[in-house]
Image 1 (cartoon, rainbow, N blue to C red):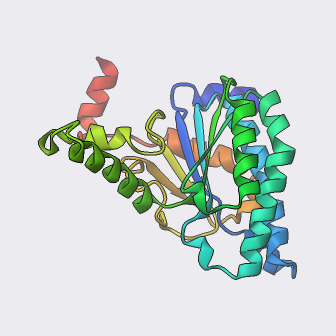
Image 2 (cartoon, one colour):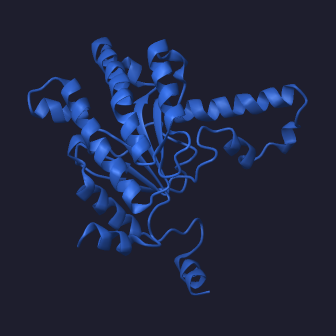
Length: 253
């Protein structure tokens, strides 16, 4: 089946928003007796391929877990190399993102990053802000608990300032304060590398996502692997609390 035919096969069943934990870079490098940073560099190549494929298919949004708030616990040298790689990737890839009509957003607590990295992030976001295709959100120094906490803090400040009453706070108001408030919630969550957990990623937003786990290490996750995940998603019945019969009746209505 060609890529065009495959896109037709997914028609009507494509996820609007795909979220990915890109796991396995270090293990990929270790298997090849290479330094861990080599795995992270290889992971950038996979990232480029997946962004392109999502854009081709018409996926609206892609959110990637690049660096969690817990990743600061890794060896200092590795963290430093990751920060350098992040800067280089932004410098090299932003032009390609602009050409492909991809809009970049970086979410998370960016205050801990160096001034240089924060500047590169701002420049990349600015250069792609008018693009109308795939919305690419990169989660960096991000944690799901942090996201919910900062949302609640914003609402608490509004209550403290008399702008709203505590009794009026509902799920919708919290949702509006989250990092991805203006994006549809992820329909499909993918984690590579064999682990089967969400690791503090988009805790609120993944409430009704379909969870797809694969043993494939991230540098080996290519368009073929993404197609397999999309095929799996297309076969899922999404109920959102309803029964299967109700869902089928809604389709026929």
